Length: 169
Image (cartoon, one colour):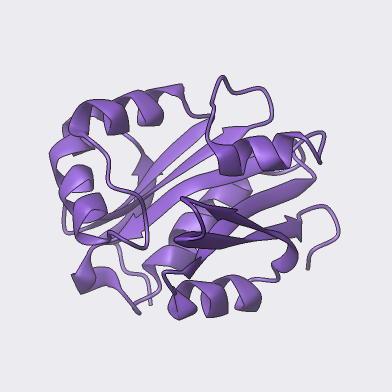
């Protein structure tokens, strides 16, 4: 699947325009965000990665840990229940990258970054509006449901997912 032209690397400021366009094209699977807010998230995160093909950004992933100064209700749900963790706040892929293994490459690179430092990898996936592809992807990667959270007067519901990194095979 991978070739020298496809790789994952750490975020650079010049990735912002492409990453923002990818994010906005992925709404409602991810929340809409301004360029300034996306840049702030990328810089504040524990790890921010981009998937690149022939020098074009094809996707990105933002991961916080338990010590972040972040107030997302989904993140705070995990903070209230878990001690030490990595939390995937946002992952988005260009349509040209969907179904081509870029999501797995981003997660593999993140898990390598977290190796031995975080026992859990946490995230949430939309149930309402539905995102069945992401649910299947995370199930295949060994994530299990640990709760659900509704927001926006029931307009949105997410499934809270966890993967044990220290015993995962």
